[in-house]
Length: 90
Image 1: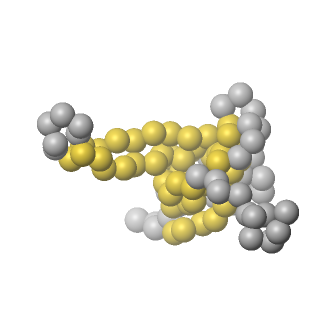
Image 2: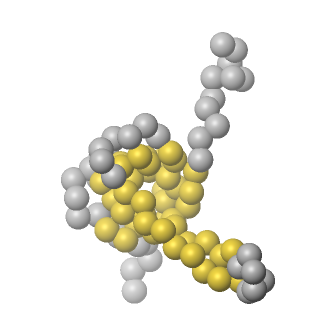
């Protein structure tokens, strides 16, 4: 395999960490706005993903990027790849 083919074409999503209570795991809420297929109105959709966080460095409120990976557990098939924005303290 050449160097250009070595990188996989994995799905990545950007979302907000809503739970960091479990060891080595975070729950990421990904929100998107799509056009309704029949009515044409823009509607908001959201979905929660369980993502692997090996060092436990991401906390509630952080905006992170997650990438699809091999199944790590029953519900975890995503890995946190980078921190997009740190949570703002109010």
